Length: 341
Ligand code: CP3
Image (tube, rainbow, N blue to C red; front, side):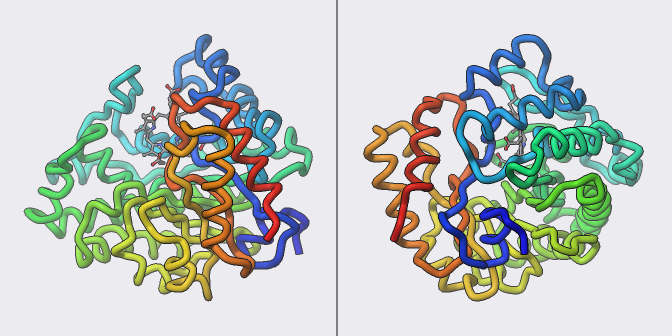
């Protein structure tokens, strides 16, 4: 037994209140984060354990959330694989794309401890600084989501390069997913060994594929990752964005928690896979642009629908937006903690 409501809820055990954390909880909506970013660029922040630790702790102190999440980015392990990664203001991530056989075969299979040691150092430092107040979540992108960035070279609307690869060269796409699955497995195992108490796999773009392609190129590589994790007493959360039509696959995934976005009906999700998984979600992030009263009403609506069975972790359906008023994020955490059925 742990004493953390967040971890208890991951294992679908009863908790005194519904635990909450917020995807992207340490980010640009916070003046205190902006102050740190005014001094250093985003990648330097990710690669400096003292600064990553400082930023990770901000939402614990300022919002009172029930879990911390490592401050880093899903694109960090791509760099040592041989892909250049930059973050440009207003554009977002810019990578050197890998699209043909030669580029894909040249990618390195990283060993996370050696290749991204600053991430493990940050985890050890955060655990020390947290002094047991809340558990620490580590994370990685899912293989397919990482592949979209590696192949597109950044954010995209059409996804024609990655989907083109899947349809034109499916075996080559398999090889890329296989490599990324090994990288993600190493990355998450190193995080667990360093002290991550839960790990979330972000499949932000899994929901752009139709069902059979999702199974082959997103779900199966993720299953390979999960099968390779050394994770006794470390719950695994699989977050799938835009995946309502894929909900019937979630029961078969060997994880403790499924994270869903706001388009999916949480009551339905609890019925579909709630017998075997905790469910994390799923308030629309833009509700945080309404009044504190409306935020409270909508948050309570989510918890009403999630029902009284243990195993609901409150979160937004996707990351908190940079324009969000910080007081409204505070109001959300209070509303969730005060809720009693
Ligand atoms: O949740 C947290 O507070 C932990 C830190 C975290 C970041 N990115 C920090 C970040 C986490 C868990 C991520 C995950 C991530 N990164 C995902 C998956 C989750 C999701 O949102 O779907 C994805 C797709 C990325 C890739 C990424 N990183 C993009 C597309 C961008 C640019 C767009 C944007 O929101 O700025 C980033 C940059 C990024 N990652 C920032 C932060 C705080 C903003 C960088 C800045 O300070 O300028």
